Image 1 (cartoon, rainbow, N blue to C red):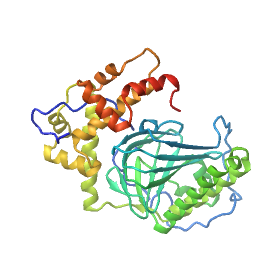
Image 2 (cartoon, rainbow, N blue to C red; image 1 turned 120 degrees about the vertical axis):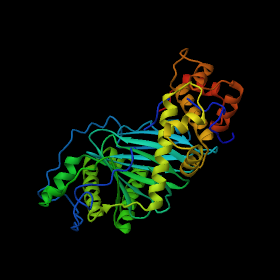
Image 3 (cartoon, rainbow, N blue to C red; image 1 turned 180 degrees about the vertical axis):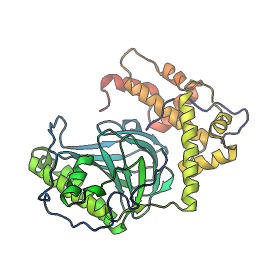
Image 4 (cartoon, helix red, strand yellow; image 1 turned 135 degrees about the vertical axis):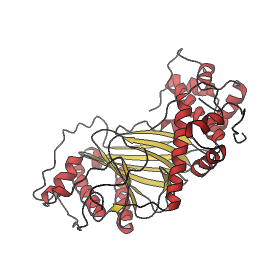
Length: 382
């Protein structure tokens, strides 16, 4: 595909965004979640901490391991996060996700072998804290991931991740009342501050890496010995206590991550991409030109091109083609027998030339759209 022009180009796209809004830097206490005091690491529950005991019903096992190659399966099997993914390279995708459900906290490990764009949103009742592997490279809402960087997110905050091959991250999902209980037991309850939106924090790099390694050791142990957590409430409680203690230690002395001039430029370009993508998704099935995206984002064609290439390493035309292909695939996989056809879903997403559509689809996903529709009738994705 050639890059788009703000003239009479070929139509681009067609509807609906995935879902983490721009980084909201912490306000209130200047150093993030807790004050600059150093908290000692505990080997058990603080004597005065009143952990709110949930009524745990393990409808799901405490440990689940997902390994998948289909980017449209990104949201399957995870109940506390909404995630939408678009594969940015035409190679075989490999994603590994390990989820460890403790009593009232959840640890989620992600790794990926290709460049991928994801939109991630946390469900109500949970706060999310994200730490990254030493080799992880990518951006979050345009902000490059770097040593000593962590994320803190309130429910419904959206993170727009673009991650490179070799990415590893761990997300810790906790209830705010459990964090508050630990701080209150130390006479530090007033220091608790709930994140606003999605916040980028700067913490001690060694502590951030130690938190990641602690989480990775937990998920690797759980993946090897799931019965250790599936069948033993005591182990789940002990791991949750250590999780809160390790997290508080890491966050002590945290401060707002101050963006550099280069970071602010990247964030602005990431926002341009978001506006263009949102506009395109709201006009499913309509003829859409680069001109329309320029107008929606209030930028020149050159600025739009730079933004897409820097953020996604693709032109607007190439990326929006991929996005539409992913949406068609989601619709085909979700279809029940007799409710749709390949042609209908292709038209719904603005594909008028079925031969070109089928070739592009197979190049992206390794199979024809008709094969996807047939496979959805055999067994729905889980």
